[in-house]
Length: 324
Image (cartoon, rainbow, N blue to C red; front, side, top):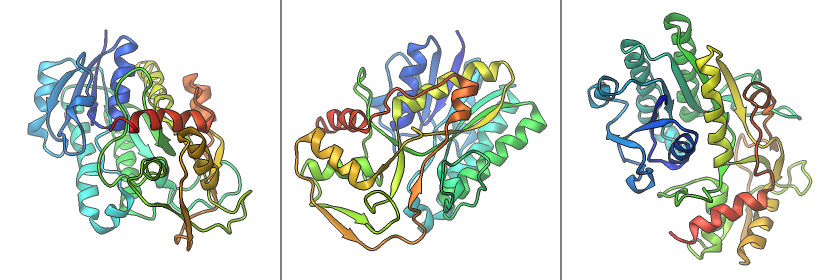
């Protein structure tokens, strides 16, 4: 049984990765500083260490005490707006922190890393069709740039130190686990699905739609939404390829676009609640449509999403959110 270190394993996506790894027969070690993570989200079968990827001395002991076969790095700040106001916070954690992880991997001869990146590395997407991995990377905020720089650190380390990598560029992640009591929580969440559900739950008065005059089927922006369990299953599927010295960069999305109004209509149906909306001005730089091609992940990893219906994604999120 191989030992997988999951950094940020007490967070939303990390905690889902932990249970999928455990259920797939891996031993799991979790590293989290609990700044944005929650110890109650960490499965009891995993071994937990409190530490911070910005401080090597706080986590090097994990590599001394455990033979680590691969690292999954989810320890990142993710709020785009905050990254514009506090860029150094993002570079210190999302970029320098990854340098530290790679440095310790090199020291203890750990050859495999899976990195949680983002579609924000592409910046303002202007293509009409699907976004492929060779689309130019041109981030427009510190969040996207901090992740792109971390990608470069990893790919350079691969050449220099013989490290294998899988880099996953996420589109919009939603939903919650149906088997385990884990899901998305925390203040200041900016993703669309939690905001819609906050309105449904009465915690927010209405949802703002940024523009309804885009050249789309209903005038609102179209985005790609992937269920968090589908997302982390791609990470688990990548491990055997790493152990065979296969590296790659992969988009992770559904491959289907849903408009903002479609998401709201779905949430109304799932929650049986009225959801007030207001249409306001477009946000600068918001493209009409951003939908991923995940063909590369399907082909190389043998992965395919199970939750292809947006109603099912929102339903699992609602079932979790009602309990908070």
